[in-house]
Image (cartoon, rainbow, N blue to C red; front, side, top):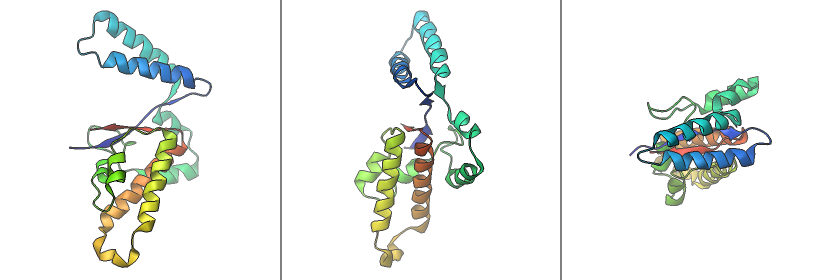
Length: 167
């Protein structure tokens, strides 16, 4: 089983309530197995309205300063071949042998921007607590991949984006 973290859109200023209402309505309509023509028309109209009040990851990247662009290159570790370059292969975290079960399970949960930052801090604290004298037991590649995940979570979380777990 794979796991990717897909960067989510965020609401434009002063549109948070409308953003989350539309997002919820769209999620309900998109779960209908055999949508009618009327339902499809409703989805199309809601998506158009949602697009007008949301900020995509691409929009956010277009506003980056030079320092942010440098940070971005540190976090690029795109998801699977089915996702965008902005996404992260969450499977790295969800199956990391050096992490405890609680942290691995959290990788499979959706996170808003604040939760991304909190999760990054949890991962960081866990890595700091590892006994550095037992370096032989720590897979260096896995450790470095978790560091990339932490940077990715902080980058997008600080930019106001959460992620959706996709597997």
